[in-house]
Length: 140
Image (cartoon, rainbow, N blue to C red):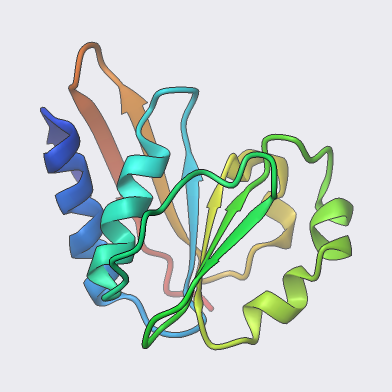
């Protein structure tokens, strides 16, 4: 599914729509360069899960946890070099804690994802316009 948004609000709304569909154990892999809207999309996703806290990028902490009926584990892999480092911080444990894992800079750790990972590619098309491609993989 491809969506075009024209503002941060619309990008958040698309994240919220996806968030409402997620279940405990879901993994959402986000792809896109700096300024593509990954954190904005994640803010909406958190709202869709019923989490109304200030969601920020975990660039320096690797993972931020947000508690709600379904917890959100928000990862940023920008500073990691490989999947091994992801496993070192307890990736397997996060997958089994009954929350949703959202991963920014997913291209760095793709081999760690389950088969049913949802892939979201965000592309800045100038100004506030974003192209969002969402692929739901039901093989898992």
